[in-house]
Length: 119
Image (cartoon, rainbow, N blue to C red; front, top):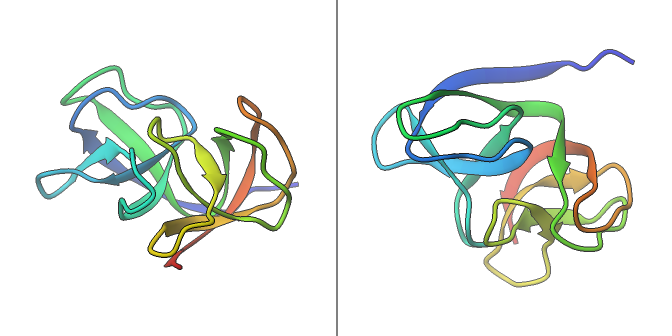
């Protein structure tokens, strides 16, 4: 199956783990790893970045793989935990990256349909 995505390159504000959710950083063109359900998540880092100033590709649309931070059921709306991993969104005000295409548990790397929104 081919994967069609929209990927843009940004500058990392700090280290970003692979397959994690990211948000805009403190400057234009910069991103940081998401750390709270209320963070304005914009996409998923595929390969991550070792540190500040490194270039990082971020998938903004399409289907991308993400690391789960807890038990997720396919179809769940997803937000971020404190480590940028995807978890089921259950709290009002959570910023959503998209929805799970597969069920899984913490540490699994699975497909997500990116569709940012808020609950």
